[in-house]
Length: 281
Image (cartoon, rainbow, N blue to C red; front, side, top):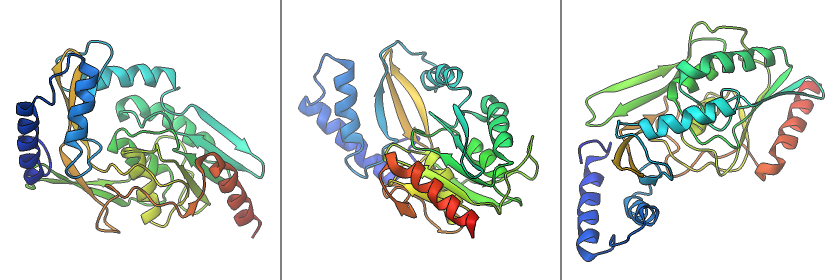
């Protein structure tokens, strides 16, 4: 009720949870099972995939967001800072994989700058988001800044209560070298691509900067915060709503629709072929 970006939905959900609790629906001994049951009810009204009760196998800190942040740090250290692969394919086409997340910018700026600067000399670029499940909107803007020539309005976030909004723009200057805004650019997507990774694909697609190749993404556009409510349970609640300046809407529920639909497993080969054909023109 206090934090969800849609107050009218929050009121419905509060009533639903109270009713289900009274009915005994949550009378289970296992925290993981409780998380599953509550999450199903939380998502039953409007399908918001960011709204959930999340189970953690290891005990989590009572500080707000600490559970998610601790897990992110471990993944950051294990993934070369979120850029685990930079590869040059035939024909001068580079691939930069961003996974498993777009980590907080204070961590990720250096490794992402290194990866994108290395790829800046390529004739065409493929950004692989197939295994990326989200992250930091500021990091989205940082990555976009390497793929555009001019400072560009990417997104507007409307926060809980509707009294405050915040625009996201690409940066006027970046550390390292830009790939730029004119060479061919492709983004790979899958049905696992989620949240901030979807924003990256959606922003570039709506600007006409990139062609999205692969599968429709999961469809989660609402940034969220986490609260520890039990040693093994974290409530994640969306606190904002994204609005794209081109489309006037976002990808919530619908996902990002690929320009070239194909199985995620085939999308790299498909994008490479598209890039080679374009470069041959």
